[in-house]
Amino acid sequence: MDERTRLYLRGRFGDHYRRAEITPPPGANEREWGYIPFSEGGTRMVRHRSVLDLGRIDDFLSRERPRHVYFSTGRYDDPGAGSMGEKGWRGSDLIFDLDADHLPGVTPGEDSYAEMLATCKGALYKLLSFLEEDFGFSDLTVVFSGGRGYHVHVRDEAVQRLEREGRREIVDYVRGIGLDLEALISTETVAGLGRKTPAEKRSLDTRGGWSRRAHEGVIALVEEVSGMEEERAIERLREFEGVGEGRAEAALRTMTENRAAIEAGNVDVHPAFFPIVRQVAAERVKTQNAPIDEPVTTDTNRLIRLPGSLHGGSGLSVLRLDREELPGFSPLADAVPDTFTGHEIAIETEESREVDLGGRLHEVEEGHSTVPEYVGVFLMSRGWAEKGRER
Image (cartoon, rainbow, N blue to C red):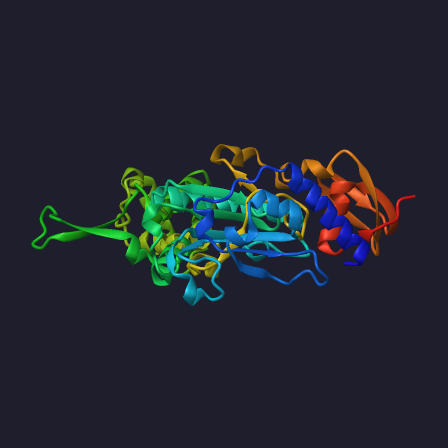
């Protein structure tokens, strides 16, 4: 980034902050603050600051015009102390980070930015299902990071004093680490007519948790094969490891004759059925886990982006989102700051690019070109363009 570009972006970020309304996080005066200025290189972090050091957050942002701005998930007795040991930890929010570049099924360089963010929103819904339904957290804040994904802040009182190991257990659950079918099954001893000894009935709990997710996969399979011709259904069941034609025929017959029992959670309806259930459950763990950035959640001292600020690597807004907004939220349109709309600027690029932003696809030619400012800010922030001279 050359000097003209750096000065331009810093000035326009300042224009944005002079008109923006920033709501600090709860307990802002107990948190450490940090920022990356628009300096040469653009990576020098200034941290170990308190609100007392910075002054009012909106005044600080208007004055300093930082490239990135962060606050700590942790709260401290002395947030401005120069080392973590001196700060006096009081507790920390529980933070989850979903990064589109690191999601299963995403191929950076092949998938477009819009496609990666769409996949990331799907992962966000999975994460929220765990947090709201499995853990029952209620004090949640969802944030579009302004870059490659989403953050979720959990501020329930129950999580504040959790150390790293407690947070690690939550990570393992959300990621499905260490889960297998036996851990999900409940076993009930039942008396059988004509039996000398009691039998055990194994079931998946259909009410919630990973057991419900596994059961949903089983029911999806039952519905899938029930809509097929018999030959194709047997072929489908033979795709499971260790299932030959005989077992596939028996499993299909079991699915048909015992559907009500299966829907109730029973996985002991036939010996040929249980190996399939095991593999379906394992696949559900792979596909239904929330692929969070694990170190972010376990770190009690993490710095996280300030909602309402600008992301210096994209020029997009870091947006706090209400739960009901999520279905209709389009990050590459809704996170474009108003400050950068309504006029055009000149830029210089070394190669042609397509930019999907502001609700439409922009074709940017190599060399000197005039583009909507939000497109130019995006390209300059990414390091793909420099500020051109206006003609």
